[in-house]
Amino acid sequence: MPKGAFRYLIKHEIIAEMGRIRQGKWIWFYAVFILLLAGASVAVWGYDENYDPSYFLFTAYMFPFMIFGFAVRTLKREWNGGTSGWWLTLPYSRVLLLGAKAIAAFVQIVACMVVYFAIVMLLGVYSRIMFGARVTSISGLFDLEAQLFAVLLGIVPLMLVIGLLIVAVRRSRMKWLVPLLWIVMGVGGNLSGWMMTGGGGLIIAGTEKELALISYPPSLWIWIVPVWAVAALLFAATVRVCNKHLQA
Amino acid sequence: MNDTANVAIRAEDVCKSYGSRQAIRNLNMAVPAHSVTAILGPNGAGKSTLMRMITGMETPDTGTFSVLGRKPSWELNRWIAYLPDRAQWYSHHMVEHALEWARTLQPGFNEMRARDLMVTLDLDASMKVEGMSKGEEARLMLALCLARDVPLLVLDEPFSGIDMISRERIVAALIDSFSEREQTVLISTHEIAETESLFDYAVFVDKGVAVLAGDVERMRAERGSLQQVYRQLYG
Amino acid sequence: MEEIRVGGMYFSLDLSLPLYEQVLEQVRSSIAKGEIALGDKIPSVRELAQALKINPNTVMRAYQELEREQLTETRRGQGTYITSDIAKVDLIRYRVADKAIEEFLSKMTGLGFETPEIDKLLRIKRGEAHE
Image 1 (cartoon, chains in turn green, brown, cyan):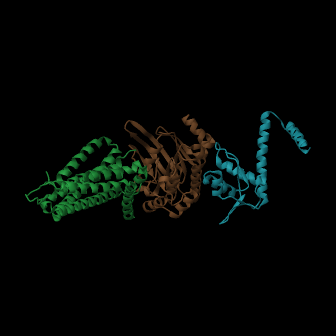
Image 2 (cartoon, chains in turn red, cyan, orange):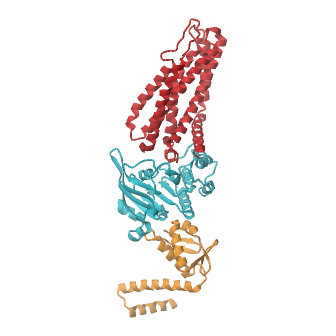
């Protein structure tokens, strides 16, 4: 029975989030506006010698913070909506309950990232068409995006769990820990950014503007292991807080 | 009441503090099985804290609880239908979705019973929770609880802030439920006047302690109506 | 509680006294007064509980006592009926009357009246009633 419940809980979370998004018709307005702006800026800026579509990818900095926000929102919603009593008394382990929220948030961020990378790719294609070999190739851009995506997948779980933990701790006997967790979140977010730019700036090598991207030697991906281990630890901590320390 | 087999909920020397405020002080209580029991007392007496401890949402600092013979926990909640204090329902749902939620997630949910309750409580499957009045939302949440075939029903202030018509419907639904099955029911309320005739057993709580508990009919013989007792105790 | 009429019987419950006894007394009284006839069906436990807005357990206890006294009989699948045995009903009538007389006498003696005067007052009252 827990299996059906788990799937349903994930579905429930996603629908609850979607409900909010669909309500904001303004989001489509913003999406179109940004696309037009981006397209226009490429057209204008593109003539600058130093332009390259891969620069847009710096904005990927936002994703670790976004997932933190999604995680916070998904857990906070139970209290804001007056449903915390229902959720906490469900006869399932906290691992399952929190896990469903984590997965729902994760699904959302992946969806956002896919859309984001697709848009940047579009701009890349557009730039390539307009400016030719002066800008990075499609395959180059794709490589860059792929690595960035992988780095993000490594970092996102940690930022996600910090989000859940901060909401749980805020409503527990240990609420004095919250400022500390905000610091952790800030450090985590910035470290993520550092990770994404290959530890200190997007490497642009070669005079032909042929991007030598964040070329991580395979062994360096090992950093994912401790990051995920810490994320698992913090998830366990969140479970424990929800089991023993919550307070009205 | 020393008969362990017939006690559904037992609290022994329970204490619970929030920082410097002691919400529950040495509370002792034995709720008889299959009874409709009232937890009575003014706001801040500790009624909600008590119910949250029974359903495992919070743990006592000291003392023990025995609910259906076991320690409160999320595992035990499969046998408990609980209406939380100041609860609301998911605003993105329609009544139909609420039924789906309960059917999928809550053990013992009896869909046929739920649909009958919808009729009794004047709720329609296509109603949106977002547009509901407080009374309608209260009736929906109560229906979800009453539709479960479980040994223990815990209702925290089910009548609070509800219009009179909704209250009457809820009382009627409760009486129906009591007629149909053997269930231990625990209800906290301060609306004594309209509900006292429902109770078999009552526990009066004041500042975190149980000051008086017993069979309601006996209390009537010895002291008068529950409302009168309430006034005697809390002045 | 105001007077409530259920299935031919009248109930008026005082919440400051045990409800079980009141329900029992008032059903007996209805039967004794003939408000419900011999062999009539009376409301089910649930119906009476709903009408009076009280716990069905209370009604159930009263009904069980009535059954014990053989004032009512439950027919499986059909409901609860008043006995058709007039002797039983008469017994109740006399019991209710007995109680009323006891209360009357206790009140009168409490006021200081003695038997001869009580008889005289009764005769006068009955004389008045005849006119």
